Image 1 (cartoon, one colour):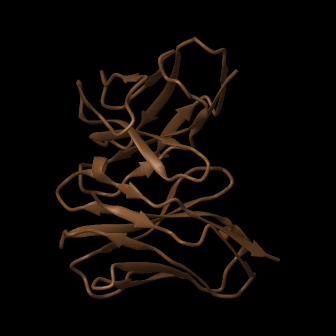
Image 2: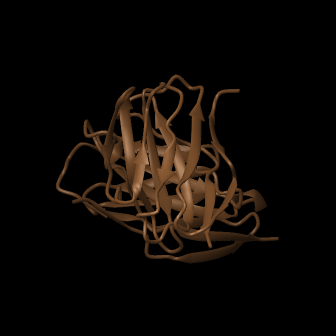
Length: 116
Length: 112
C-alpha cells in the first residue's frame, strides 16, 4: 500500500516570504501522479498543483512550484511571495496511474499560517 | 458556474438517527467519491462510484450507505450503525478514474 508522509504538522511564515512544505511517499510503482491540495478555513479542498511522475520537469502554477525528487520519493511544495490568503491546511496526495481516484492517498496535512 | 454542491453545511442529529448528506455536481463527471476527515488525519475514502447505478466500498464503509441513481447526484447516508459519525464529510468528483478530483465545500456532521 502507498503511504504519504507530511512531517510538518504546522508552519508559519511572514507575509511575502517563501515557504517550503515537505512531503515524502512510499511506493513501488513507477507511474503515478502527485498533488498538493489546499484547504482554507472555508474547508473546501482546492487543487493547487499536479505532477506526473514520468515528467522530469517540476510543475509550476504562478507562485506555487514543486521540487519533485523521484528517486528520493520526495515532493515538496514551495510558495513564493506568500500571501495572507495562503493560510490553509495543505495536503499532499498520491495516485497510482490507471488505478482510479479511489486509490488517492492523502497525507495528514500541514497547517500553514501566513503572518501579516 | 460548474461545481460540486454539498448540503447542508452544518448538520446536527441525535444519536441513533440516520441522516443523509447531499452531493450534487454539474461538471458532467462520471466518478464521484465520499471522504471523511477527522482532526489530525488525512482524508479517508468511504464510498465511490465510477458510473450511474454502480458504487463500491472504500476503506471505511461500515455504517454508511450510498446511492447513484443519477449522474449528478451521490447522496451519503450515515446510519445508526456508524459508531462515531461526528466528522467533516467531503464529496468529490472527477471526469474519470485518472483525472484529478474536485471537491465540494463539505458538511460538518455533529451527532449529540
